[in-house]
Amino acid sequence: MRKQLLLFSIDNFAAFVGYRKYYEFIGVNSFLSAARDGIDGWNHNSYWIETYANMLSSLHFSSEKWDEERFPIACPSYENWLQIIKY
Image (cartoon, rainbow, N blue to C red; front, side, top):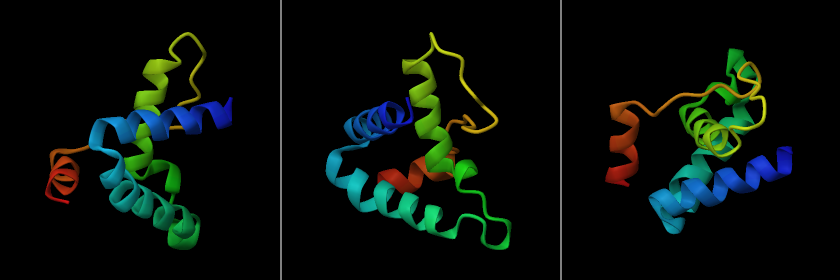
């Protein structure tokens, strides 16, 4: 399920923002967030890119029980949308 979730998140998010923007902006920032996980209390699972990908995945896999504690869900803020649009 985790691999299926990851592949769905990448495909759906990339299709939404564009594949080039996904890999250059979303992918890089997600990777940097994951590298920081646990340092000075940083929680990668709560990073806005991850919570939005989780939201898209939860909508797709709605028939299955979603573990919001492990995979928090949230829409990007207005400021985060501007980051994507400006990139």
